[in-house]
Image (spheres, one colour):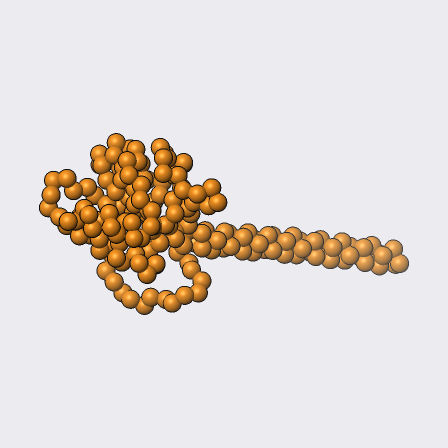
Length: 184
């Protein structure tokens, strides 16, 4: 009779081991799935932060304005890629206090009805995608022949003709004076 009890006990122990082992497997799978979801969530939020869709701090706009497609703002990498033969590219920080003055100067130039009028494109240097074109210690490069060589200090006005820089103007006052000359 002792043998039967010993065999019965061994059988119960095997069943307990098998059920606890399968419980551990299910638990491990759930932990792995939760870990994967957490990592994917973190990657999603990091991507949103890097593209500037999520910003920390500052004042939030609760302004419900109508969305419109605009073709004047470009990325710095598109500086030499526009289809126009001759055009201006204005690199600036859109949140700077002096920016509206330059935008008004450019708008008054654009609104002129002359034949030698060229389009003006804007590059927001505060966007993460345009950080590459911001001049560092090496300074700006007014003789760049491609976007990969281009380095600017905001604000900078560049006149492009036949995919080459023909004029390069740095500084708010100098750009303001340039547009004033064009508008005269």
